[in-house]
Length: 426
Image (cartoon, rainbow, N blue to C red):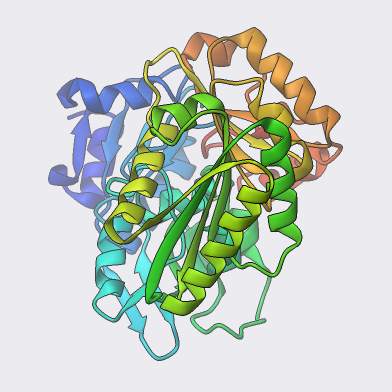
């Protein structure tokens, strides 16, 4: 080892550093898809928060550009980082700090895998109400940094809605905290919301505290398929009704077909509660579909679980590397119009947030124009590097860039954390 690796090895030990030339191709690939240039980097795996702090203090002193990550499952999301000298992974910081069962809270290190934490919670009949991409690989820190959740936000809200406390390492290596470990907490600045979705540009998350929820007794899903007009009416009626689905999404025609659910656009809604409530709500939605001339079906027990797993696999596993995956936000009333323009797409019924697969640059620009016409947005998550180099990944058209840049300079005045990865090249 020499250069950067030698300096870092004195902090974390040689066993916690992997040189670029020793990485497997599968490990190199997401890094190459996340950066415009790599200055012979190494990956550092600090096993403790104190060592992570020392690593960042050294990087700050030497002005090394740092690309933080967890397991790397979302490393290729967002903009291309520039001139990276060192990659810092929290994957080996993966311990349970505290699970307060009675208070419905859990505190963990950022590198713990989502699936591992859910396993811990399941022993107490509890769960974290998020459904991120690649749940078996994704780390908690990466989920927060990318604000990655899915259909469960219908009932439980987003990542930031469930965060209670956060500990992070500043660009200069100092350890900072915000929030706490209780649900009713109002102390300090609300840095949890600021760090959620910041893509590692403000600091490296080291610990988080979440609120958790009791597992529900029964789960059942209603699928309605048919014409765009009828699906749009069903979705609108569901939004204004007294029904309380935990998940509710609008599906594109090809996605409906790929899942073997029928023909036309789709509306899929999941109810989770006591048995009587699930049956009643499912039947009421199915009856609504019948009144609108839609085809309908109810999925229960293992069929219900299998359906949502297949949907997750379909929407978040692109068929080819050339596919451009995008995050979309739009008025819910305009969701059906957008889904008619794409092959693979899912938009949450209540929030208007969703996921699209697009095939080329011009289609991205076309759909982006349509979303912005409806007070929405479209940002690119994954795409070939050449695409990201030739199109604005974030497509931000608001007036908050000066404020964002000011915040970035306060947290990272040397611009060493994920430079270029966020909105406006931040």
